[in-house]
Length: 227
Image (cartoon, rainbow, N blue to C red; front, side, top):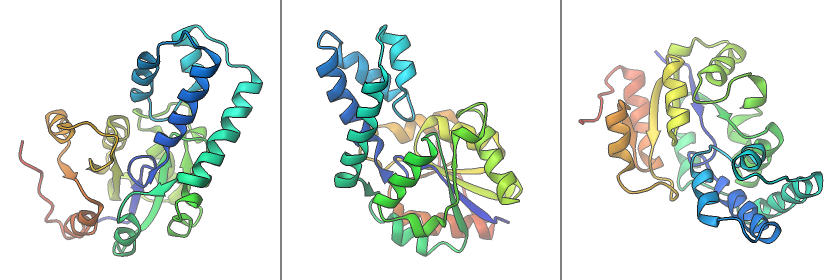
């Protein structure tokens, strides 16, 4: 019934976007002391990953090439020190009898670095798909459909795991069976109930649950969570 597992990166596999956001926020505070930190944090929460151009437009600031280069360097250094896999994700992936790939809004280079720093590179064998490969990012289904085409797998034969609404909506719009992971530390309380109201049928709180829910999906016995 299913041939492939597509995983979001930040918040589903790796705790890395939190680190990059922290670096960027510290740099913005230094460069723009008058900037409202709470408003910047709110803007971060609405994004799958820090988008410098979006911040420039929203707050009327200009981030020159020097700032961008320094952010890339500082973020990479912070990731090398602190990037970590979501608890139990490696053990979960080993127990799942499906090939796995990553679909992420991160730039390809950052994505590869995040996975490598978290010690998960071998689990995906280079099967990394970034938003650079499509014209429309999540929540549009383009990235998931692009990954399915490249993998030569029908979208309906893909299971997708994501933690954020954009990824969940994108994979569902692509016609994939979608599992929401709500165990990331960055997620607010009550998030699972919000997802249920949005129509997300399959929700897990711990990565240890993923092999079982994949097994049920493959056996055709997966049941939606009650609302």
